[in-house]
Image (cartoon, rainbow, N blue to C red; front, side, top):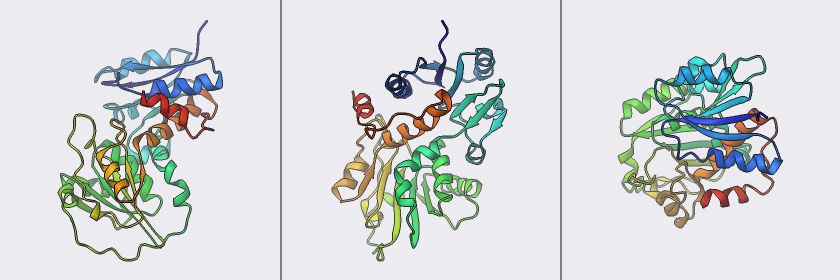
Length: 286
């Protein structure tokens, strides 16, 4: 008997935690379906899509590197957010045989900040480290919530081009990564009523990569420090931020949030998160 399924595609893909996450929720809900990985190399995307569109059990796929932009050409419809971000991480097979492309990264990133962003602020600013693919959804998500952005990268021209493309209407700024590595004696004004955020959207701090060099003197009082790296989960940036008294958000938060936004599209039910993801996080930590 056939069973509905969804999957995650990419190259490489073996390291993906998506099957564990979606499998946990499928088990919790008692849904007779499965979620798996599929290794799709560059140049194989067209054949993959043709084969899956012919499979009535296929509900869609999550998309990771290097296919998030190339997959857009195979979608019949693009969600406005995906179109603006310029990347798709969720493809949903519709009942009429067409494919819809979404980007759930923005929603997943914003989820832990939603309560704070519902408040009224005198000013909102985010310092974003990194100008790679992960930064695209973050830039769009924060700009839509009237956050002034400082985008830092090794190449400031690339940072400016990203801001001009994705957030052209704000008074945003660029800086070099090295600027934030050095201690500053800048005295921040009274941050009462302001929203401040520091985001590591780069691979720095990831297993096998050097740590992100960020001196906490660049973080205004009361900032949230958010690192999207998932391995290790407790990065040096988060450790330093906690030691300095800042509020921190780890990479599993965005990972689980974006997966939950995709899960309902694949399987028609909300992901069960009544325990604030405690059981799922315990599985992810093993």
